[in-house]
Length: 319
Ligand SMILES: Nc1ncnc2c1ncn2[C@@H]1O[C@H](COP(=O)(O)OP(=O)(O)OP(=O)(O)O)[C@@H](O)[C@H]1O
Ligand SMILES: [Mg+2]
Image (tube, rainbow, N blue to C red; front, side, top):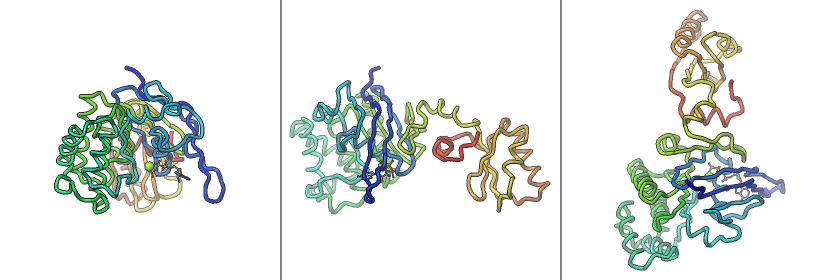
């Protein structure tokens, strides 16, 4: 395996309207192995798109280094661009061109012949349900149609490194499936490396080799799902929802032998990290009964990526 992307000490600072400096990316370093599917997760405004935009040469860097296939993108942005495909978060289609023209021009820019570009464009327009709209201008497209065309355009030239910035936002479930069929095929057949950001946690859970959880400009954790699971206090979680959480309840429950830690998820729900989930469940139920507290819901579940994400990106982190 070789490193197809290396990001070293990357920083991006923006000047805000009031003149303050905002550090959107704060000295991050990571790499991608060729052929892996990597998910870069973080809350809104964390700096994910800023990171992608710098790597894909759409935004200048404040400092740091980005290497694609061992070559600096600053020294050779044109060579770097030839290796990548991007589904940007914003709509960057050419509104003055038809769907077909958007794809064919893009393919030719990336070195495809006219006939190869045309036949690939027909195939992708068909797969993404746009064949009947091939000659229509992009400005007449719905949000989901434009998103489908952006995806088709990014994979036209079968890039070595594919960046997907929230690609399934605005896509209905049938087209999400088609997107993933294409991405997984490219990954399997061409060893295409995929860099994904998404807020749909089931996507990295199902498809990623490694996941980075990123917040306020910094990488909080990076690894396989199994490795990230170890960073959460327990392998299962009990959510206890009451009509109202009385003062000090989390402290009292956290003293139980069967419980590792308790944190308040919101005004009505406690997140309980148990040592022994079944025993803890029984103890909680009998305690609530004895205390005559009104239980609305109690749920025991395996720790999901959602839980890991919340644990790593919220201030109140528990054990
Ligand atoms: N051109 C800009 N000028 C000033 N600030 C910017 C600019 N672009 C982004 N930012 C700021 O940088 C931060 C990171 O934005 P970014 O778009 O990278 O977040 P994100 O992680 O992609 O969020 P989302 O999940 O909402 O897409 C935000 O606070 C944003 O306001
Ligand atoms: Mg974004």
